[in-house]
Figure 1 (cartoon, rainbow, N blue to C red):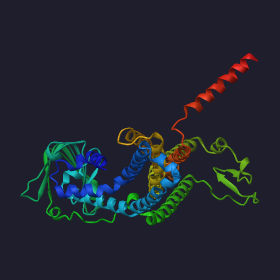
Figure 2: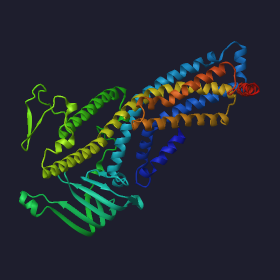
Figure 3: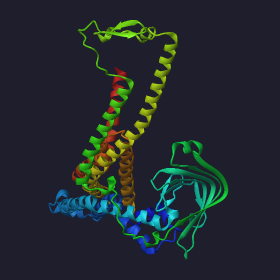
Figure 4: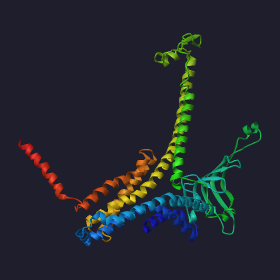
Length: 473
C-alpha cells in the first residue's frame, strides 16, 4: 500500500507541491485517493500472501505432515477459500460504494483547491476554466515560484450573457497576488486584444464590428474575496463513470445507448435529406408522368435499374447550366463531408463514454473475482516452489501481478477506443489467470513440480525418433 501511495504522490506532485496548501488538505487528498488503490493493492496482496503462506508450509514440510495425517491440499485450503470468497464479497461492496464516493470527493477537492489556488487551475497546453472570472485560459508553459510565470497566454473572456466575445493573446504573463489583498493581478506583456463590439442597431455593427489593439503591458484585476471563503468539502452534482455504482451505471448505460442511437439516426436522416436521397418517386404504373427541363422531357422510370446515367442527365441541360450544376454538387458534397467529419468526432466521444460505463460496470465484478482467482494461482504456486520469506516468492508474485495488471491496462485502453468489447476489456486479465490457477491447483494436488522437464524431454525424443525412422524407410 505504501509503495502505491508514494507512486500516487509522485503522479500528483505537480498539483500539490509549491502551492501553499495546508498539510490537512494534502492529507485529505491522499486519504480520498487510498480507496482507488485497492484495485491494484488487493489482488497483489492476495497473490503475495498466498504464495508466502503456502510456500512457508511446504518449506517446513507441514504439507507432508498434513498428507501423512490424511489431510489433502484442498482440505487444508478450505478455510482460506472461505475467507477469500468473503474478501471478494467485501471487495465488491468496496468497489460499488466506497470507490465511487472517494472519486466524487477527489473531484470536488481538486476543484476547490483550484478555486483557492488559481495557478492550480491553469493546465499547460489546454484551455482551463478559471473559476469565478468567466475566463478560459490556455498557456504553453508555467514556471517560477508557485507557477506564477506564464508563456504564450491565450484568454477567452465571456460576456454577461456567457458569450465568448473577447480574445486576448500575450507572449508572457505573470500572476501577482498578496496575502493582504483579495485582488489577483494577471499581468500580460507583448500581446494583442480583440473584442466583438455589440451595438443596439445592425447598421452600427457594420460600422464598428470589432475593436482591436496591441499592448506592451496589460493588467487584469480579479476579485478573489469570494474564493477565500471556499468550503473544501463543498459537493458538486457531477458524475463520471467512476463515480457511479452498479445500479446507476446500468441505468445510464441504457439511456446513453438510446441517446447514441437517436443521435446517429437523426444525423443520418439529416444527411439523407440534404443529399436528396430516398425521395418518393411517382406511381410506377403512371407512365404519363414526365419531368420538364428546358423543353425536354424525361419519363420517371418505374424500374430504377433502367434509370438514366449521370452523364445522360447532365446532357439535358445547357452548357452554362451544366457548370452551375456540377459546382453546386461539389459544394454540397464538400459541405456534407465536412459535416460528417465533425459529427464523427462527436459520436466517437459519445460511444467512448458509453464504453467507459460498460467497462466500469464489469470491472467491479472482475475485481471481486480476481481476488479469488489469484488466490488459486498463489496458493498452489507456493506449495510447488516450496519457498517462504520475501525472496523468490516476492519476485514471482510481482511478475505475475505485472502480467495481470498490464494485460488489464492494455485491454481497458483498447475497450475505451472501441477496438474490443468493453466487457472483454474488463474481464480479459482475470480470464487469462483462470486457466493458470486451475493448472497450478491440479499440479499441486498431484504433487507435481512447476515444470516437468522429463515429459518435455520425452516429447522431443519421440519427435526425433519418428524423424529418424522416416529417414531410414
